[in-house]
Length: 332
Image 1 (tube, rainbow, N blue to C red):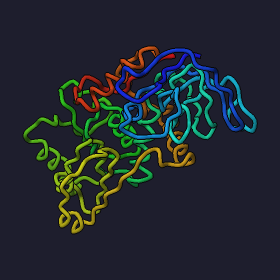
Image 2 (cartoon, rainbow, N blue to C red):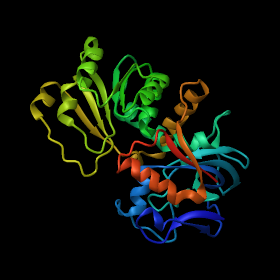
Image 3 (cartoon, rainbow, N blue to C red):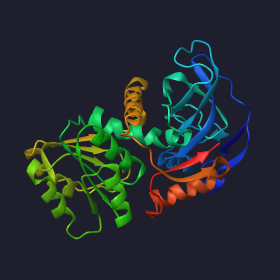
């Protein structure tokens, strides 16, 4: 089979595209004929060595995939050959990555692809959708009518947060860097979209959320969070979700935090159990069918372009070039 893999960590140029042996599904696994995969920041961190994992080379990169089941292993009960599936959480904890024509995946990490959803859409929404759902509902305990804030509403996680929060009946405030992106945020369902370069940004947010007493749930996805500013915009008993910023060391005004009964919650999607992630996936499928969830694709490339795709993702995640809205999807 063709695959995108590495024999050492390093820059995107270490990614090779070539032939590797076809995998064979073990008990509890299914063999997926992969139709599409997507690129995530975590993929670039693993590839570069920034997130140090014990890797066995050649190491197939990638977390997300969507495709069709071709063979089922012993004991598989949830799927049969011919079923369309999507999934995430690969390339970690000893699991092989997804950037290949064939992938042997434990059935617990796969979900049925809804009618009308393409493999490209399914792959684009996999990791970011589950991440958004976990932060909003499992950790953030979001309720209908509450106010959610998310930075960068056209990014992978940001666009998912907007849509899933709106599907649950929340009001959503977000930011973007251009009128075109702000317009896109509003189309996704944002109730207030403000240019993050605006000198009156916080005043606009305060004015919009005044009747609610502030923001109930702040979903922080920035590498360098401004916690002091965030605390000042929160409603009493609000929740601040952190899911990024490994090296960040922000100032933390303790007094205003505890006197307003605020909560600070950190989470990593990869810590969620298969059952917890399945809850997310099933509701995402339901909301897609209902027209409330549409994974956002920013650029479509070929699996053979994996190195170029990693360079583009890295330039936007670390370089903050702002040239990407939505996910990079690679067709297989």
